[in-house]
Each structure stands twice: as structure tokens, then as C-alpha cells.
Length: 404
Image 1 (spheres, one colour):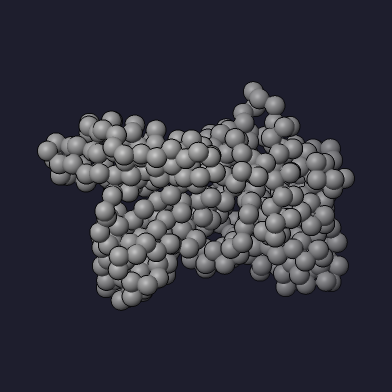
Image 2 (cartoon, rainbow, N blue to C red):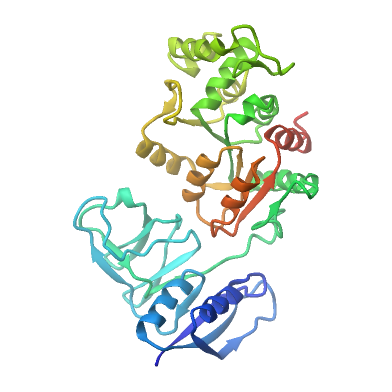
């Protein structure tokens, strides 16, 4: 029989942390009993409870501890975390501990060191036992000391900010069977609150924003300074240029939703015009482009990032086509983010979620309930899913923000 004393600490009455840990222990066939505990007198203060776990074998106990420590439990009287030296750039030790995105501390030289910006799936580098850093796999260098296993690591799940307008909505999906208006009102209020606090609002957008006719609403948000950074696909920019030059997206007139004569040529000609100008900024400066989402970004001085894909017909000069470089640029653009809104672009949404610490609120909007559910159920507690069209969502968001 193997046993271990664990502790769960935090605002336990605002989280399902304790319930999740008990469920995991029971499902793995371990026995437990409640030891010491303290219930805070205020919901703002942390409570804690100790559980003594018993397992049939050391391996069963070890496997359970590896899982529940990622949920927020930690071993009482834990020793310093184990570290191993990296032998080759970009190659981790075999048992490297991967961060969950939640606030994390690591024990070194008898002290608990916080891990700033604990990006999901990054690893922990400990520098001379004095500082802990979250490092993505490709940034690991030979000689780095990387934490292995979960001993000496503790995670502290945190509820959303009490002032957040999205309190009670995060972790859920608003389906087509429920009214979406109230949720969009709260998203608009949260956007205003985040910007008033000095943090950034990041919008991730897919090509459906353009060919659904939602581009004009996004332009209003950009000109109204409601968005601090736009992250979009290369396709969005190409369709945006096609609308600006020909009034069509994918060969269809947005106003009548009917095909234009030889409309299939328009996208190629628009792409060619921007490439001939030398990129989007020269195209705006030379009046090749006089309207559209990217025109609004450039004239309103809103930073933007375009990321290419293997299925693009061709990339604009402004688009990042190197995947590793795109990830690096993405990580550099996101510090200081207080809210991420992602619309009809599941691939980029996943990339942004992996580049943001877990406590940052995230909203994903799509007509695909499958994609929405998949992103909400990734083990990320601070995601609100909204099954809604890009056009309806951005129109209502702009209206609630007073953009029109």
C-alpha cells in the first residue's frame, strides 16, 4: 500500500477544482480520507483542504499524482523539483513537465518560484535555482535545466476576475437554441473594461468575416479603436482586397449574393494587384486599396498579423508563411492581452490559445458547433463558445460598442 498527503488550495467555492480532483482519484481506484482543512470566511480568501491518498502500488499513486497536480493539487512537504540538462537545442528531456497555462510555481533551493506567463505546453527552465521561466520547446537550448516530472510543481487554478463581465459564462457554449444577444452585450462590456484597464483586445478573424459580409462591421470596430491587434489569415486579406477592388468575394457580389461575370478571376487579379504594389501598405499609400479591413488597420494604425496556409493560392508580401516564424511573431504580439476574440478561424484560434496564459478570457465564435465545442472542451476553463455567424456577431458587437 502506497500513500501520500496532498493539499488543494484556492477559492474552492468558486471553482470545481476539488470536485475534479476527487473524481479523478476515485476513477483511478484510489482511496482517500480528508485530513486537516480551513474554510475561509470570505470568498475572496483562499481555503484549503488536505487529502491522504492510498493506492495499491507506488506506480498507481505516481500516475494519479501526475494527473491531479495539473488540476491544482500538490504534495505536502514536496521536495525541490527535479531538473535535467538539455543535450541538444530544441530537444527536451524525456520526462519534461508541460505547463497547463494555469498559474504555476516550482520549488527550487527550498523556495517556491512563480513561473511568469505559463504558456500552455511550454516547459519550465530553472536558472541557477533562482528564477523559473516558461520556455516553448523550440526555444530550449543546450545546457538549459528543464523541470521533469510533477514533483515540486504546484498549479493554482484561479477563477476569472470578479469584475469580469464574462463571469459565469466562461467554460460554456451558447448554442443556437439559446439567445446570443445577452452574451454579446457582456462581451462588449468586457471589451470596454479590458481596454480601460490598459490591456489589449486581440481579434482573430478568418476569411468568413469577409465573404459573409461582416467586413464592414470589423472596419467600424477598427476605426472606433475597439481592437488593439488583428490576427488574420492570408485568405482574409486576399478576399478583403477583392471586395475593395471588385465588390466581390470568391466571385460573388456581397450586396446581391450573385456571381459576377468572370468573377472567379477577381481574386487572382486582386492578389496580383497587391503583390504588384509591393504589399498592403504600399497599396494603401498608392491608393490601389481605398477601403476594406486592412485599409482600416493601416489608416487607423492598428497592428495586424497575417498568417499563410498551404492551401493559399499565393501569399501576400505581408503574410507570414514560415510556421516557426509565425509562432514566434504571435508570441511577441500577445503579451499584455486581456481579452481574445476569435471569429470563424479555428486553426489560428488554437494557435492563439496556446500562446496565451490560461487566465486570459477567450471568446470563440463560429457557425460550426463542432469547432466551438472542440475549442471550449480543450481543458481550458476560460473560454466562452458562441455558435453564431461572423456577420451577426460582429454587427451586434459593433452596435453595442456604439460603432454605428
